[in-house]
Amino acid sequence: MSDNRAYVTYSASDGVAHIELARPEFGNTLDLTMTHQLRDAVQRALRSHTVDVLELTSTGGDFCVGTDTEAARQADDPTTQVFEQAAALDEMFGILNASTKPVIAGVQGLAAGSGLGIALAADICLCTPDATFRVAPHGGLGAPDPGLAWQLPRAIGQQRALSFALGRRTIDAATAESWGVVTVVEGDLPAAVDGIARSLTGEGLWANGETRRLLRASWDTDRTSLAQSEAATMVRAMLRAKV
Image 1 (cartoon, rainbow, N blue to C red):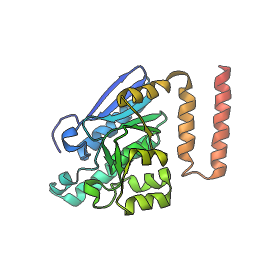
Image 2 (spheres, rainbow, N blue to C red):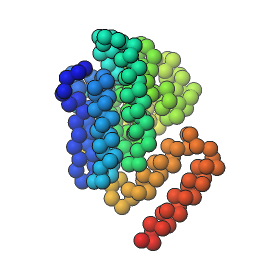
Image 3 (tube, rainbow, N blue to C red):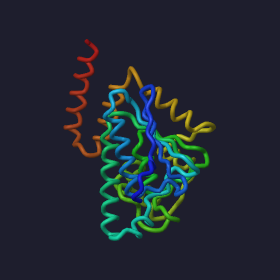
């Protein structure tokens, strides 16, 4: 989509950046423009000296039902469009993974494909009791959206990820919670997301950021190197305590 409409909204207050997917008429599917807007909003929050925590939410009935394959089909060069979209998603997920600030997500309705990827990229994901999750978007047909094959086994384990994906299953909120993906929230989801986000601002911010960094780095760092990084972090923590 080439228009100038804002499909991702951004606001910040009291240390929390509120990033919202706002393309509800299309189930918040991510086309190339919207993916770039989401990336830019995340980068804006990470660069801000007044933002401690990121919130990722959406408008409408569904959180995000995947990438917009119809936009790719209608492009002058569909193959190039698909690869550009994959690169944009990879960049966006990479930025989220490397964030030094906690990321909280709130999911309602369906999170499928790259929508599930956004949920998995959060450190804490809350969802409504009627939320559902699926690997393949678009009715469960086709391959996973770019970025999901890297994230899913790390979140729920390889065999469970294979069963989830190959079985073309749609899981409910209770199952997602039992797998450790989400926390189910009764009542007001936006208020719950905002409450968690605000609880992570302020005094514990530095420790939260370092904890996030160390845990996420564990997948790509050998044990000895990670232990050295943990020790260096402890030293920095002690020096901070003396100030």
